[in-house]
Image: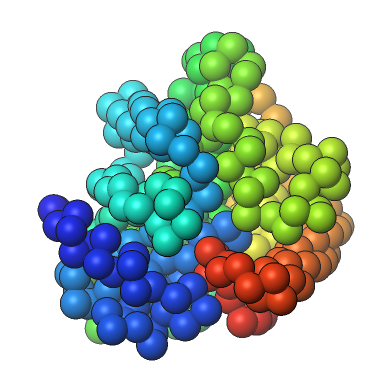
Length: 319
Ligand SMILES: Nc1ncnc2c1ncn2[C@@H]1O[C@H](COP(=O)(O)OP(=O)(O)O)[C@@H](O)[C@H]1O
Ligand SMILES: [Mg+2]
């Protein structure tokens, strides 16, 4: 997997975050996460997915991020044994003179991405996928338990971050065993001796400036620590089913997760309740909806001041 940096720079030079499709080198948005947009740029390479990260202010931040990304990838692959999407970081220069970093990954087929697949899978098949994801989660939290307090990895286990690596043809039944692959690797969460290694300022950059103090004060700690807590990681994963319009699966997933939790002796293995999942989802949906609308306000303010707004924002997220 190699991408010509000159070509990527050409792409960046003509890229308009408001209209990714309309440039001389068109891009399609493959998906939105909570913090980034993932692009397909067929003119550069149709087999790749490009995660554009415009939040860096200087070279030193890029260097630190790159080192952390590599360290976490090596840990996941070699120590944890998690199947992760390969990635390459390529740096270009943004229109404002600041570095823009792209994480480039092989483009995974749409039918294999779990939050898309669950719309066509039967409840039974979906539970097989869920079980496979739980096994990966256990592997990671077993590593964390072994290195507790010294070296721990944060995992955002939402359905939209996994694909079924060994499902080649959507016309055939799901493979057995299912091999999940984790691809949301552009937020390398790593704690050393209890201290988060990812610079939280990078998160805050994409927030509207008028919100930064509030986010820093009320949300940052929570966002940065919930991914190290097995109970919360699985609650988050299940709550996500509401967003994906598969509320019907919530009760069975809770039951399966609780069997799983009861069988482990990992930290934070207390059972999950339906009430907790609902409350979690309501709060999460409210926060993200509000957050997105405030980012749009911020984008409008940039516009009024005649400044280009660097982020791609989703039009509307259905929840
Ligand atoms: N390698 C990939 N191939 C195909 N689609 C992808 C790939 N990576 C991400 N996507 C799409 O983009 C969405 C967001 O990507 P993700 O890596 O989870 O970013 P975020 O950190 O913003 O959550 C995914 O849910 C998926 O639909
Ligand atoms: Mg994601």
